[in-house]
Amino acid sequence: MLEEGDSVPKFTLNDADGNKIKSTDFKGKKHVIYFYPKDFTPGCSTQADEFSTEYKKFQKEDIEIIGISPDDIDSHKKFCTKMGIKYVLLSDSEKEVSKQFGVWGMKKFMGREYMGVTRSSFLVNEKGKIFKTYPKVKPKGHALLVLEDFKE
Image (tube, rainbow, N blue to C red):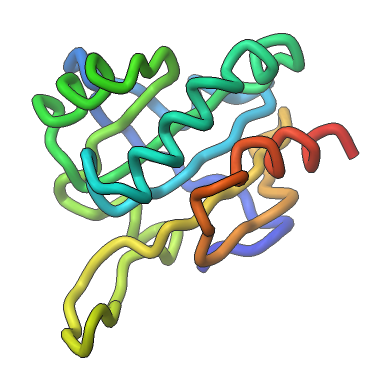
């Protein structure tokens, strides 16, 4: 997993509208990149809802929010519509960016092992450097925690 002090890897992914978004588009801006396993699941819905609820507070602090999951752009479009998401959701269907960040790997749930995304977040400064990481995020309350950590 990427660590504090690391630079954000260069990547290009499609958003929910099919637009190509580059990691370099956020250079010069504070931003949070959060990885989540799957649209429409309970934890991911909670996390997306909280970021949406607090979105104006993030905007007031000039902080961009970027959500990334392996879901395709059609799923993201439906998820954005249902959840009222105004920030960027990116489709990492090939899992390349998840692998670059070190969040793709073996998971266990109810005795079953499978490959998937570990819910993780990265706070990034204007220079594109990661200054805080959150491995194995608990969705409830995470958005406000992130906002507070940006203010420190």
